[in-house]
Image 1: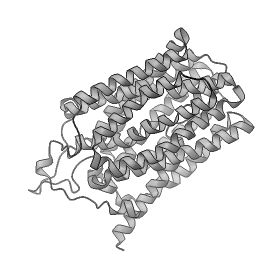
Image 2: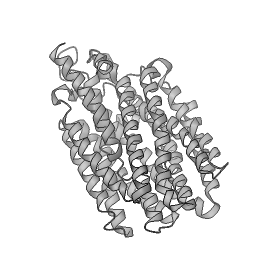
Image 3: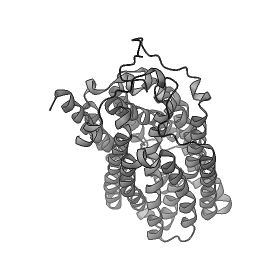
Image 4: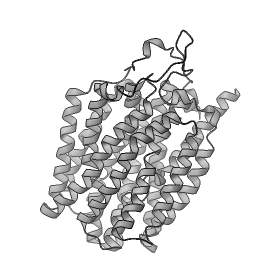
Length: 428
């Protein structure tokens, strides 16, 4: 086996490990924050929603600059290392400073640092695998990411049952150490940084001239990208608040089991996400990228309606399995569709950042909207409202978004299509 092939397989294995361990780090406390504030700090639902929205907006303002940074830098591994350390430190101070503004500040810092991971992992994956192997690599990324979330949720749920909700902080610290080792294990020489930003492998056109990225105006003139951004925003406006609402309902029924039941919800979804992500990686290029995206949108109205049928703990955890279907598909197909639309433009990562900015606005508003609806009309009304929003997104996608599979960016005609072979992904 050639040295290049061995390095590429090593890179794929290191990416597997990085995705597994970063799963618990990249979102910080995530949905556990709502449980912790509700049960340990005695906050009401509306206040929790406001804090989560404020901290979410901190991530929003960092999204597009983060994508631009990933496009520009060749130190992608170190960027992920510093982001993981910032998130962990910001989260570990929470038990010490649990007032309104300290929580806002610490979690805003964590959210701002966390936005670096999606574009950086996607960029490194594209730089290692190339366009032909990218869909399979993304499916593999998401599979290991969800497996990592499932493992972390199992550990957090088990330890929280015996020692209380604060154990999630210790789990986060341990996962951070492992993630740093994994990220630094990715061989630097296997990452093609021009290809990682969406340019051609050698960044040259047939005349031998250096290929230059398209202008940033392409983010506003690419109509399918704008439509995709609207649909993804509606998805997250619908989806982001559902799990925290379920966690709050469970915690109100039994405080001692609140965190453990939240872990069970996360675990149930993550178990389903693994095969769904792998399915996208294996079949999306054959079946169509839009078809998978439509499926992810359609799941949310069904999920919202089912949550209203019963408050039984087993039922709520069971319905949460549908989150694994929708989020598993979207997590895997999102970077693939953006790569479709930005191919050969050199703006892959800043485009990811721009679309993630839009979806983050939806996610941030989701918790505030849901909290207000719960206070005014109850949990069932909130679930139905969130589901209806996703239904609108499904309609927009169905009628306005074209199939992106095979879509080429503005510079395609001037580039040769030779990329790293995808075989290392399957073999790695």
